[in-house]
Structure formats: structure tokens, C-alpha cells
Amino acid sequence: MTSKSDKVQVSFRIDKDDKEKVMEIYNNLGMSLSTAFNVFVKRSILEGGFPFETRDPFYSKKNMNELAKRIAQAKNNPGEVHQLLDD
Image (cartoon, rainbow, N blue to C red; front, side, top):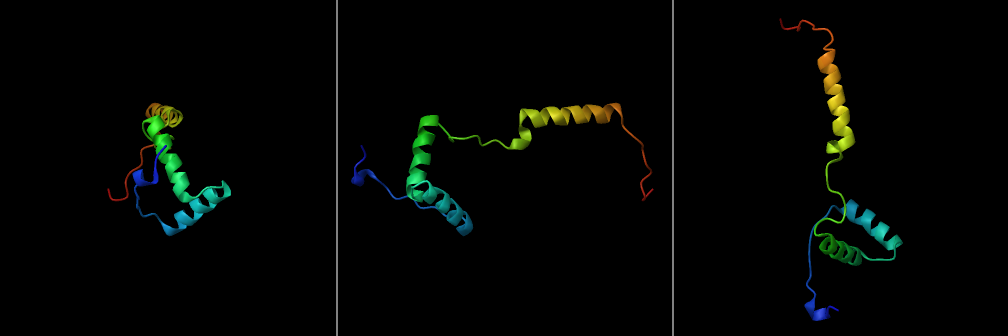
């Protein structure tokens, strides 16, 4: 168990509105922002990184498959070529 003398203070800045929103969420769960942050830290240690997915959903397998399908369709059916207005 960690003694009070082993604890250090961490300070960071977040958007005021984000803080209010997240504090309401954690208060409804019966914990403070400090406790929630400590849970995040402990879980990060257990996971060896973020305790949740941090990838951009644009690059999901489903989306990449859909993009590949649409690119193939565009190559197979190029549509009409129009003269540019500047020409």
C-alpha cells in the first residue's frame, strides 16, 4: 500500500467545459476527478498503455474495406469526363 509520503502532486490543464462534464460523470459514479485519474493511471500500468482504443476510427478495417471497394468501382466506371471551365 502506498503511504501518503509516497504520493506526488500532478498538475495539468484541460478545457473548463470538459472538466465540468467529466466531473459530473465521475461524481455520478461516486468518485472524484482525482480518484478517476488514479484509476486511469493504474489501468494504464496494467495494460502497458492506454486502457482503451486510441486509433482513428477512419482507419478501421470496415472503413478501409469500404474505401477500397469504392475506389475499385470508380476505376471500373470512371464516368463522364467534362471540360473544365477554364479551358
